[in-house]
Length: 232
Image 1 (cartoon, helix red, strand yellow):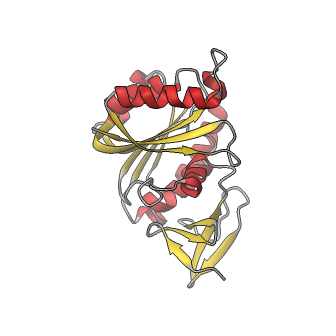
Image 2 (cartoon, helix red, strand yellow):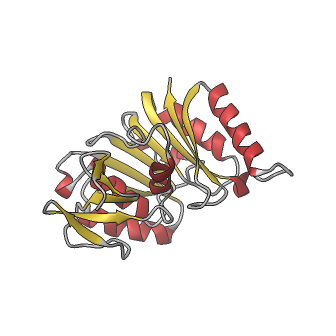
């Protein structure tokens, strides 16, 4: 068996497989495998169902830096049904929010919000909100202070502009920002994926953000790229 590699207190890699320390013991969130390492229960993190998981699997230089710190305040724009969110919660909050973290999860879909509200009941520290990432005026009151970590995963045009605006409004100086970019949502001309990704990287850098790594998710999430940035 391959030697376990620790990415964080709650995230380990066994061979090429990611696992997170289960904050809700004996419970499988989306049918994922449960397994014990050294007497502790972990959940398999499927990178084909999670942009954040795919980013961790594919990062070459920043794998140990992508995640927030345990106990951080995080903003997740486009939280979906909660697959990635549940693994993030394992790391940021832990069982019964032992790490005292907070994850504000925004999604535009009422169906997704129902799933997130259910998650909230079993995962303390999670704050689900029905809202549009493009229009923060309806939910910004839930963020009395700036956040340590921001992840955006929305399938809307102008993803970079939405991300930059959110980062400037809500991300602390030195805070980490992750933009999951879907090229198809930006295809307003004949540009290929690589050209679109280059344009977006330039936008991020021109906005004053530092791009720590541009992570190609091809093979796990086709036509997607994850930009890991830091707020100056």
